[in-house]
Picture 1 (cartoon, rainbow, N blue to C red):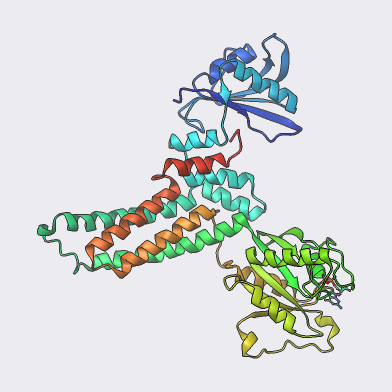
Picture 2: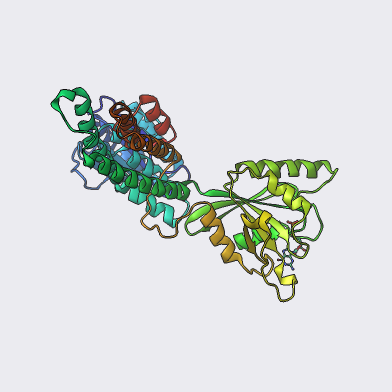
Length: 449
Ligand code: GDP
């Protein structure tokens, strides 16, 4: 058990019906007894008590829950003091625990301890925070899947396969005279093939998981008056941006959150791009150009009654090549007997969607195209939540596995690449993690978690 006892207010700050102070460590039970003047707490049973300060005045009354280690969340003794959700009463209760020998918990310390005591792996610890911050039902469910271990399980399976293969390869290197017929052993090649397939599946799942967790930024860009603000309003189902036929109305960036298929998006409506001398408008245009650089996807809006202009093409050329983009042809309601046109070769490799932002025509097609272009896989169900850290690591594992696969006949390179892949993969669940990585992860948690 941890030598130190620490405590924190574990519920969100502000006014609420109930608030919880959590104490962890060897003195947790003693402190609870002193605060409540009650000496009898049964494990995992709620006991109704008064909570006293050092002058024997009642601070609050509520429930005490006692979770003895090692079968607690952190593995240590934990006490929960559940009082009323008054910020002042909770602070007095916390102060009392500090007076009685506890110290204030650091950010993420409960979860960190749970990880260090082997109660959860790193992915599970992270998914607790992702569950708390989930912005849609899908991301909450996915975070729960990660917490229950579905992401970790896929990693452990691949890791076990890597271990088996490494044992064989290392043995062949260490004992060449034992005559392990390595090169001719078809199993090695097959095993590598299986690992390649599984790691690629893991990569696809991780990408989807990151999308669910981080969401994506949609930037709407185009000339003035093409209907950018109208499209923002239609996608958000609200009148957020001002719509007029006066060019240059949107001068600053307007952001709005929407959810499409469980993925949360920030839609960013930008100032119309045109040649202008208006200082404020110029700043807005510069902001629009900057927003394009960090977008997950750019919607280049076109007034279909005019068609694609030289300025639209100049805007397109400003979108970095790695950012997916859609030519969104708007105002089709103004064209009699409208038929989507086929485009010449210069536009053929760009996605085109035809809509009326005003009359809400083609909006579902646009939503579907957005999801597809940012890499959303419609066939995936039961997705677990993941973080950018995981995606970077899985990408690196894929690179090492590919190197191993391409050099499978060269024992030294194979052994080296498998070792890198194994270590990187273990870093994700935390079986092998540098201390500074742990510090970085847990410091982003809130206090009380
Ligand atoms: P922005 O300057 O690009 O943000 O364009 P707005 O959204 O402010 O729209 C400019 C004008 O075009 C407004 O008068 C809108 O009502 C009109 N407009 C926008 N979208 C459509 C559309 O799909 N059909 C029609 N008929 N008018 C539209």
